[in-house]
Length: 346
Image (cartoon, rainbow, N blue to C red; front, side, top):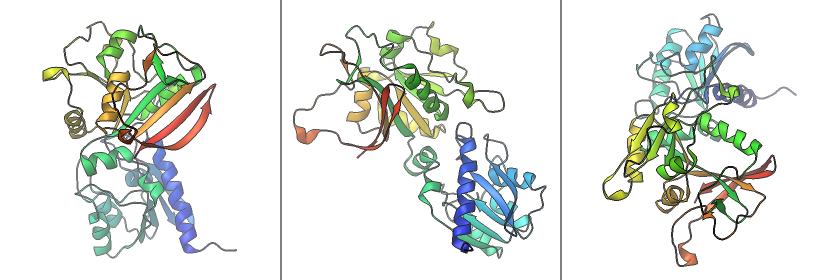
């Protein structure tokens, strides 16, 4: 049976979405975008946006097609940009190179693009189809959050025992989970623009909070996230390992002994942070939950019990069941001997 035109569009679009994933750890603060050019049913060029300041997906795919895409259909996972920034407008690029049709996975929420890329293409006589696929929009949770609401996508990472404890009473927490779970965290760090931790974690564990797994290297180098420390009283020692990170360190101090999380998130978004990973102890994790300053939690549960005197997963007080904070389990899997549970805020 010959596939319908809509089925063909979906097939090529999902290829574009897969291509976009190649920029997952490096495209920020730009979105991940994939593109391919198809003529007479054959892919003649494909590409993705890798680094900010370099060619967008449409440009990279154009080079792969030896710049000959006249009469072709362009499949782009995100609406082509409609303004000139660090690079020329991609909508104009498609017009100038004579594509006949453009199929778009999702509309770009950026106010200087949203719908304007589509309008430019249509005004030039190009046939445009917008598929509005959830899979295409889901490529860029951080970019979408930063553009739409002015804060990053906040992901909490917690390693806990079966009785919900994250460290011994002394602060000792290395290691609750196994090696496989700790390796899995490298993927979370690699995709994050910044990591937020608390000074208590720095003092207790002296973590590096770096990406070390060479699987996430692009062009021979690992992009390191910025490290942000909530440290109201300036207790972070100058000898802390975080200062060795190539991603840079930002110490957040505040009047009154408490960092304003909402203000911090707004500043990070204004500085181009799409995805923020929170790796911290119960005080900061609890503050994020209590302030509803989170979108997703990745919880690694180790098959062990630490007892009542050990430190809790999150430090905040509620009295009534009706005041409990809710979450929805979106995924779970075994990672080594530990259970990885992904939750969304509700």
